[in-house]
Image (cartoon, rainbow, N blue to C red; front, side, top):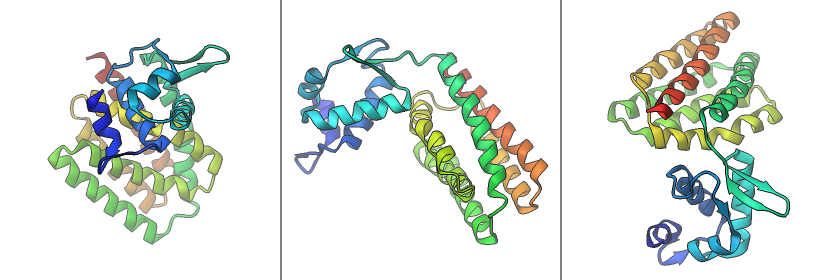
Length: 224
């Protein structure tokens, strides 16, 4: 309990915002502090995390949206099983939408956008040298978000964002398998080359490969 309280306190005051509670609750689920199938009772969470009822309820709703927990009427919330099938399904859905958004970005991408993408990729590569996974994930999100926002499709972007934090959390928990970090660098460069050339077919191939390889790598990491 003390470890959690230290995470949600700042300057001696408890941060009762649902986002902080959500992040910590997500971390505790992924670390298996709350095992799959565990009932998440609001009264117990309030006592454990030393926060009020509202941020707990809001955090549970958000994590249900991510697919991390399941809330059933008259039964409450419980931790879902994060098995390989669940992760595989998420990636299959994301691949279709991510490739679509990436291709759509070609219609509006400017030289300034491309310059921004190259800079973000440069930052990713700097972080990779230090094996700073959190910074790498942040740069990776910035890289793809920059592209996806150009597609100007809020609904598709919402679906992508729904599980983005969950995937990043899984990456922090399981890490990268094999030479995935180096592979990401190569794949991002291939995407950048295709965008710079405004080559739709080359971009589709690069984006699809990037998604499939990311899925395979995380599934492999989860098995080990």
